[in-house]
Image (cartoon, rainbow, N blue to C red; front, side, top):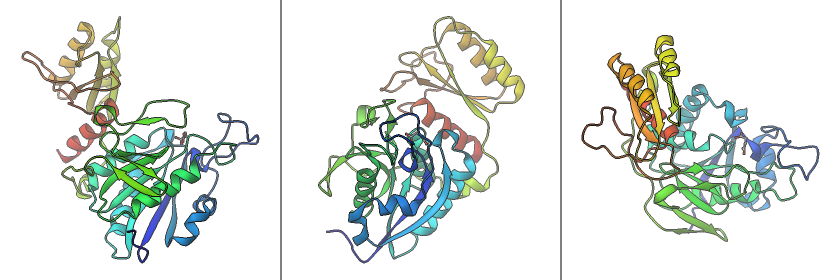
Length: 310
Ligand code: SIN
């Protein structure tokens, strides 16, 4: 039974869910981050019955997401969740970097209440807009008794922040959870849960007090890979490199030599895979640490956080 005495905080950051186009049939030529949080909530009649607290934290296309917004979000989410009268938090976000924000918040906070990212693949003006249903489903999950951790709900599917990834550039059902599979589904306003809530040891907000996020880049191994890009990054002062390798994180020999050289120079180097799912496992003789089940973008965030902690 959902708790009707406590509120859900809806923090808006922009994205296509808040996007508008001049032509309702235009699903790609729109401008993201145009509508404010009040308009998003008002578009969902069922939310009139739910106690909500709304805040506009940012207003951007999530391709431009940055560390300052992450820090603001992490601090505000922690403050709100500490309140007895708040059941959970919903964050409206663009789909393009949703998985990065979700992973960063889970690693920093691993909250004991639900934090649910909501987004849309179609702008608010589209004939077939998915934002209002996704927002309603996110609020439903944020009010679920016992729910905890950072999650995302899109197209009725609940994903853990530890697994979620955008897997399609256009379809409305654009997200997946790799090998782990979805955490559950929201069906007619009810959660059907398939597995446990996201769990991880949180690094805590103190991680953010340690200074600026270190510069970490992602490079890719492919046919004809060359070492010069890595050399240039090291010369320019990069602090960490995540390489999206082939298969089990294998690397073109020229790129591997440059990455080993970078590692010897003190740069943190992790190997992930450019495959859409599956882990990178260490084997005897591997000179560069494996990122396990982390996707390249997750591995980059994890490496930044580890470097930040020193
Ligand atoms: C964005 O990520 O802000 C734009 C694209 C989207 O939300 O689908």
